[in-house]
Image 1 (cartoon, rainbow, N blue to C red):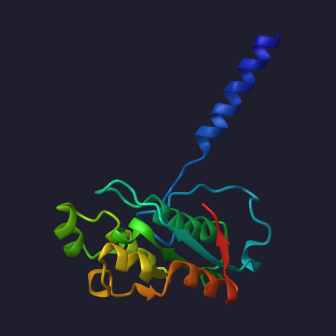
Image 2: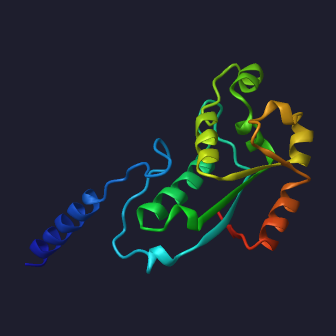
Length: 176
């Protein structure tokens, strides 16, 4: 009897797990897969988010930066849950070798002889009104100049400074 009950329970749980379908969008169409969680957010239309993500992790060359994709997922899942896009303000502070993922496709190809797989995602984040800041200290150390990165990237004195100033403006730091 116990074995039958265990089998039925495992079967039901596996059906539930399979029914959750991860999809991209609705804001950033090719990135940020997420799943609907019924009643996962109380009063979604009343929620307001002002969040900064701090990223220093770089993926393997030729791969999309997973941390940048997390920013896309944050936006997509909240809009899918019913939060109005105008209630979501996101900033991305990039430092360390992750700064290479902000390079233009031409500059990235010059340095690594590969395509910058994060370039399209960076453009999509800008279209979703994400403010992206590059640490000036990291950029200088790595030899990255303002004309080497997407023109919408803002060069900050440092990542520490950008994070401090954004938090003074009401942004909360979302840990990875």
